[in-house]
Amino acid sequence: MPLDDSYIRLAHAIVVQAAKDYDAELDWFRQNPPLCEEDRQHQTYLNHKSELQSLERFFRSGWFELLSGCLLYTSDA
Image (cartoon, rainbow, N blue to C red; front, side, top):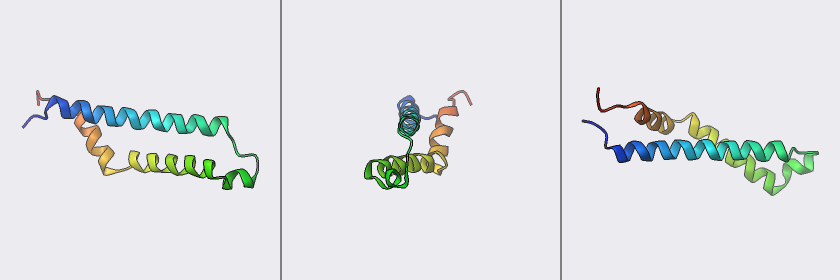
């Protein structure tokens, strides 16, 4: 049973957005390196760290694996 093209586009959009979000978080850390332990305890730093960890969990998850599999799926098979 072939996947509907709209589901494949949705899977692609989710993966692309997660990659963009991850890149944005990495950019934030490159531009805002903590200078001391107090910086590491600041709420803004903790929020960005939490978001980065959440995205990393997503990329290692079965959900990501499923979405990635949708991207590789072709209706010709």
